[in-house]
Image 1 (cartoon, helix red, strand yellow):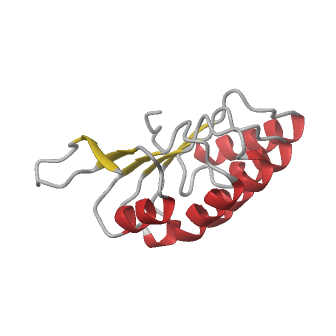
Image 2 (image 1 turned 90 degrees about the vertical axis):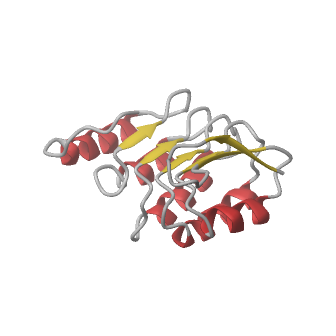
Length: 152
């Protein structure tokens, strides 16, 4: 079921949607065929299979700039890598939230490669990141130094 959350534009399009009773294929089709800028799937119980479905579809969503997958503890390293791989080639997502996703060093390192291009804001609080991810994230932040900061 799709429910409009708020209108972010004066041109009549709904740009931010919140989803209840998640039917992920229908959500992805709707998002990819519209001008949705923000997809909030926070704390909806995404499974590994659902994350893979979403990751495989991100390249078809040219107007999506904010993706919130926080609060889904099954993201883990595999889900983080799938999302990172999906966002790397020519994706418009600039803000990615994966807080509380049980992501460790392997997933954090994959996500760090996104910093600067395309992702400018990466939320990873309440995960299991350690030294390797911290070093990779620091290197990603150094790449962002010359770019204007994005609001998180």
